[in-house]
Length: 362
Ligand SMILES: Cc1cc2nc3c(=O)[nH]c(=O)nc-3n(C[C@H](O)[C@H](O)[C@H](O)COP(=O)(O)OP(=O)(O)OC[C@H]3O[C@@H](n4cnc5c(N)ncnc54)[C@H](O)[C@@H]3O)c2cc1C
Image (spheres, rainbow, N blue to C red):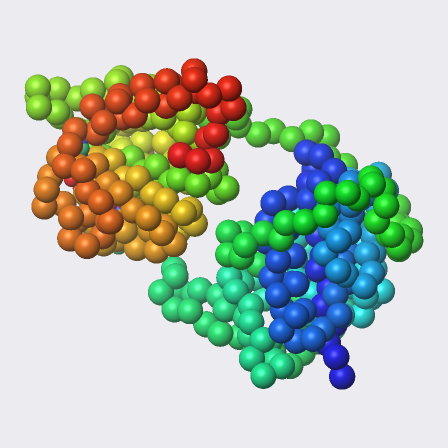
């Protein structure tokens, strides 16, 4: 019997489109649909899904289902769970693929329970092997990779971002609103709507230094706060150099443990660096196509956090640092203060000559 797959997504709260990672999951869903000879359904949740439906209308799904209305505009467990459950029941799919957004991470385990199915989160890849689906995910801080197969159905799978190429529509002629969307009615009991989102408190965009979608990871190490050749520290120069670079390049900021730990030890620190920026064994393992390390020694406990960084470069005064020992593709033996000042000047020059700044190309 042919299998059926549901691609489930919610519109982003900032607008009516889908979060970028949704198109990556759609890419994975289409690949699996092809490998299995399966049928694909798309399910959308949000206040108004028409613009989002338009962007996926040409993906080749048999049905596009939606639960829409003001009750579904913002993340809320009770309404999101009811919406996802209704779509899943209507689609009656064996496999339900969804992006690992915070909104879905909170709610889909509960939905799996209501459907008497099972769920796997943090999945990084999916493939069909002899008509069977295999999912992979990492355990024990990215040291063990598990391959999972399950008999229970429906099987809900939340895919991590940055693990699959995003599906891009090839049709440019679609008229807005032309996607045929089946509305699934969901009447919420009063208790399901008693939590209201009164506002969102987020850091200002210029201090938002962790950018998972950036092409470049920029790592700052403890060297930025250490005594330099003149016997003095230059934190007051390091701060604007790094912030300028982040602003003009659009890079995401990572830090070594030594640097982020200084925050708690009341030493001279970079004010915008927190433990959330820490990359490594006890930090994060971000996914970016490129990485540039500065003033960081490149010790193993730090570099294990670079596992998913494809192209690696480092700037260090020490030609014998860890990066020189096979951990980076290119090591510039140079003073990071000088290198960054030069880089910032080049980036400023580019933004003067090019009307369209292209931070993602950094
Ligand atoms: C169990 C365990 C878990 C750990 N987990 C992590 C983790 O998650 N993440 C992590 O980062 N570390 C982790 N560590 C710590 C790790 O081993 C290192 O101690 C740490 O990464 C060192 O940080 P650093 O390279 O920034 O600092 P340092 O070792 O002090 O290196 C500073 C570097 O800056 C260079 N430098 C100084 N001035 C300049 C300049 N002007 N231009 C260019 N280069 C300059 C120096 O040559 C030096 O190489 C862990 C350790 C253990 C034991």
